[in-house]
Length: 269
Image 1: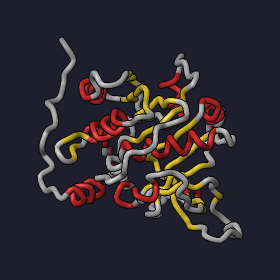
Image 2 (image 1 turned 30 degrees about the horizontal axis):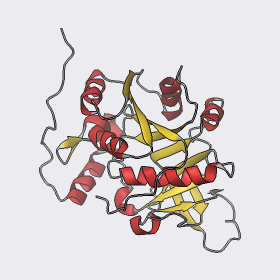
Image 3 (image 1 turned 90 degrees about the vertical axis):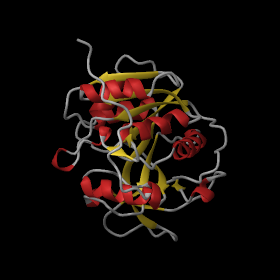
């Protein structure tokens, strides 16, 4: 799905990738084990994280035994992997708190990855991480992915941004970054070249300090971040319902979506 070139070596802290496999969509749609192109969506995100130069370890947050067992099997033997069972209904902030409880974060940044964004590539994560690493010296604490599809459910998720291409590989990948995100509302800032984009759940990068700040904001659904990574349209699809799944199948050019990647695992008696 991606023609993104190999990004430059990541110069910032290594990433601990936290994969949220506990999110349900419309009508009980549970994306983690939904098959796409012969693989469950969980496999798409696990493989992207496994392929990253920047990711040192992976944590999968699952609220169902089937998802936990599948994650342990699909991620076996390539990078350090922890699978944590959590209570159903936790949001991203609460899930991240559970993932990091008692975990040593020294020298590590966090990459919060949605399992419902299968076309976000490992190169996207590495390019965002490389940019984030460059900006840490300027006081950056968080980066969020953005989409120009404007599929925002609420006006609060819209942001003004200015595209930049400061790293090798960004222009070729049709991704872009923004050093400053302006809140939507009222008149836009009087800066030439601004465009409107929507916050996107594909990935969020945070320093440990930013994660602690988010934990102290129990009513904040969005992580504190001033940097943005604008995903190109073909990699920005989020699967939240059956119609999204049909769009993804059309993108892949497949009509048969019943292939099983691996037989479901059951707990030992």
